[in-house]
Image (cartoon, rainbow, N blue to C red; front, side, top):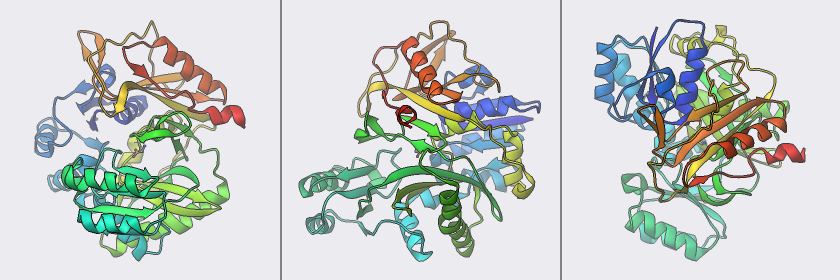
Length: 426
Ligand code: GLY
């Protein structure tokens, strides 16, 4: 079976590794992939946003199944294009992808279907937004409505800070078109939960829960990032809470989508804030989370190809989604300076560490994100460079990833020191 994975991050390396673990015979391609996917797949030099080229490649190479990692090709309508050409592709279509590509669409949708979310207003001009923040108690949350690679959300502590942020979005155009509409919403203080389900248009199955560490610094200090680490399961979430999320968020959302004539097929990711047992939706993503997926998929027991196919063929109900009964962790090694400016091109030394990330029994996995393989050597090429994952018992798994983090070397290496620290506290 020929399978194409679109994307170049740690999430796509983890997806490719899970595909490689399948008992089915596979030939894996990754577009554009990274240094890690080069070990288990053929990297194809087509950018994730070049949907036309990707379609030509899939048709010419008779790809049996395409799996889309990131949001950009989804928001551009890659699923509509592949489906129209008679190809099997995993992910929601363009209209469904609005849930992530337009925060305004998502907020209005939540309101319409009575799903709890922070009170908000949307703005399209600087002056009105600036006047609005003058009347607000702080902190407040300011978000670019469009896609911003996880960097478009600000928690502002003061009116002056809010005005600066609005100025940079509206006048400085730091997010380009993605910042033409801005959402300002109330800040909710609680604990965050990444909750993902697979959905096939009629039924859904939840994945295991996870917790993302979004901020760059220890103790959740500093700027928002794409994610600096993750653990599964989310240690704060009970079975009763999961039931409540399904009943008050997932089911009304999937029903609402049907009412909007959207057949939602793929992964629906709800970024949730839980405060005193109240569940607020912070955001929807229309894809697997990164780095949560790396921690989730190393615990997946069932065949991931069957999961993809059962969603595409709309028989998810019959698919048995099984995870190992343990815990997992993912630690992100990044280039110092990320999520702002950082340098790349540094050689990575693994110091003899064997990476068997695709082997089911492997104690740890090293997934690549911003890396390049040149002449059998690996170099940094992005902000988030490597993902070190381990599964088993806590707190031991945290010790494993931190030991590996010390052994791997590259110039400007940076990582948080408190991922999974909660294990030591519990
Ligand atoms: N880790 C958050 C995200 O994937 O959007």
